[in-house]
Image 1 (cartoon, helix red, strand yellow):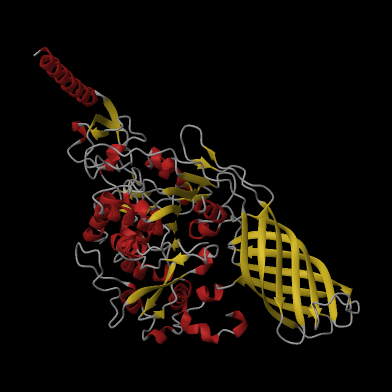
Image 2 (image 1 turned 120 degrees about the vertical axis):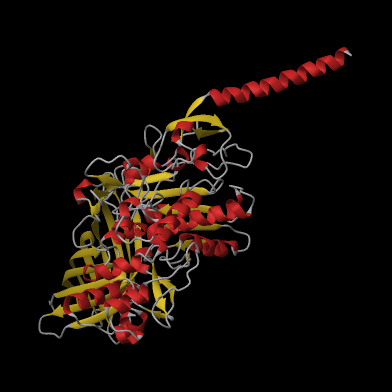
Length: 356
Length: 279
């Protein structure tokens, strides 16, 4: 591949460094969290200057933002620590290791990430345009970057094409994912013994809120109520009493309205293809039982990639988007969401597409 | 004078036709935030009964009127950009995605153990390459009714070929394998492939020499490989002697892993504890 290829990984797709030291996210940190939660044994975490307590883990991974600001005031609440993105997790992108990489703090505000990505894209290799493969949240960062660049150029929806020739979106949750809501609600998709701690932690991460699902029916009420169609999971209504930050939800709504609602609108003249899988059972709603928000049974989902529900994304998309979607896995398994980039069909097709 | 009157009449006609045209557009019904924009090049704006600022995420294909699209409301243009002049961008047809030949390749590390009767277990650590290729290509097709592109009948059976070599030390090893692989990421336990085939091993101090039975041993036998998330492959092979091994067979158990897998699984601060061969 040429120098102009760029990989933008997804959530958890980059390591996290605390003062430059790899904290072992997610594999080793999860393992240690499980071990500490299950046995009380804390292994080697002291090397970071911390013992593996719930309190210190929470402080290490939590962020702080001034209300309305997209730039974090603190990337870690642990005294004297700051967290920065590190190298990508190569196992999830082993077919793209010859690409340049945009590493970013996937916890942070998508608008800040989009700006950092745009700054990177502006420094394009001489005489060429970027050809981007963007996985999951990475695709949302590309969308934000395209709209920021359009805004810098008088609202031109073709400006981004001066920087970028191709974008391959892989499993990008353009309209959110129930998994983000699940992280805020129960956090059991992180590590069960530390679920309570992680629930506090992820509630300080704007990106998780900005990936909350927005489609009609993402909250299903078990008892009829008049305002059911009036909200989705970026609104306060379903989170009532759950200590989810209003500022974070507002970030989600603002980001949605300004950047994510019509994801391709500033990609005119860019070759775009978005890959989705419909091979796996995927959650598409939560239940609101009275005032209590609950996880829906797995069997009540739909086909998807374990994170992005395929039928929902079809329903939510306009024709110019559908014309650039490539759905896989209806009649055969694909890799699940977090590994879809290295699927035997997706990876070679992305490379072929980037060369069209 | 008559010429001036003619110009005036023409100008009036032109103006009235534009007013009539705009009025026609205003009267035309459309579906706001629909899949397509029926008002091109104008937008479809929400009808008053939807309220002053309806959330487009909660309403689709709602009552609307053709007119100038609202700045910042690309949903008025069915996902295309609403320009400053109130018209919508026109998107060209998307070219169909290219056909795809499903395949996969990976640079690997190979940590093998050789078990032979009356001999110590022999560790062999090398590097190599694995490849899986489908027997057919897949052509994306457009779903009927204007849906997305889809790929039907994805192959599940692949041919695979691989080679690894270990050239450090007095006795060198090279493994070559050829076989068939079933690719099915829905297997349990993060298994993505199960493969079978034949594995050839040449071991000796001069493995590049052909026909030298004194310095090399050649073995060949069936293998079974299980792949995990296309990053880790566990292979067992029962190798029968072809030449120079005094009739002894050998069982080889191998772990082949993506070149940088250790970097993912083991944090930087623990990398120093890894054996050199695994880094």
